[in-house]
Image 1 (spheres, rainbow, N blue to C red):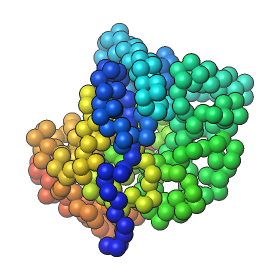
Image 2 (cartoon, rainbow, N blue to C red; image 1 turned 180 degrees about the vertical axis):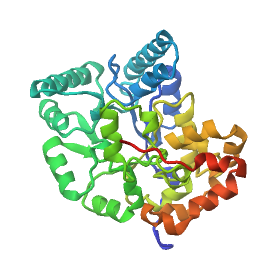
Image 3 (cartoon, rainbow, N blue to C red; image 1 turned 180 degrees about the horizontal axis):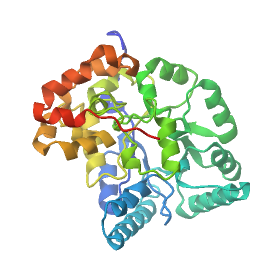
Length: 360
């Protein structure tokens, strides 16, 4: 991050874009407009049980009191659109489908093997290019059964060192590694991975503290049936809104030499969010409200605690660059997040954010 660092032309950046269940024909048209900047679209597999965390968006609607029949209808439409998108997009854009280990229980080895066979059949029937995986057993078995499938790791696979990556590449045929989200705070480690020849993908717009230090707690809590809305990013109140593991558009230049693919989150986001977001990153747009660009539990919480006009005034250009190198262990001495709080949020709302959710 020194002044002399090489800066890539933003026009050369490549992204991973989420399919968010909207009209598949319209979505594909928008992809075509930006095709030179898109490595792949990641899309929910159209399985009724939904084998990624997207399922929680629908489960939570029921938990919060929405009519179960209406929620099931929305879920069915989402999956129908996923199927149609995968069908229509064949040969037009690469499709990589996520499979999240938090979302399926295995009691026996045979259950794991049967699940992998199901994935291989889906890959053949839908003619998708590959999978995003967080479970080593699933990745190794799937690679043995379907060696031509492209395998990416999920950030939840928690690849943190070169030896791990070597094993996953050798045994699972991994083509692209998505390291933990908090690694964006350790660019020297990213450089080490990239210099070793590994292709890297990093999530940039999800302001999540899942690994700071909550990755394992978060995943374990979801596996135990906790509501994820209470466990995602609200561990330290409003500080997380400004201190989390996202990368602002103007910060990408510090990562261009070590990140091959920038991942945009948003499978649960509505409408044109994926495209509005990729456009903001490509243009290095600093004028958008932070809450319109970033996704997190903290932002969702803030939207309940603050009037919309206040959130809209917290624009990206008001976030100081010091946060790019902010480290959690320095928070007690730094006080920067409290300074931001006092400058951007009216006094009558500040105390609402001074809390801590305990995950037990």
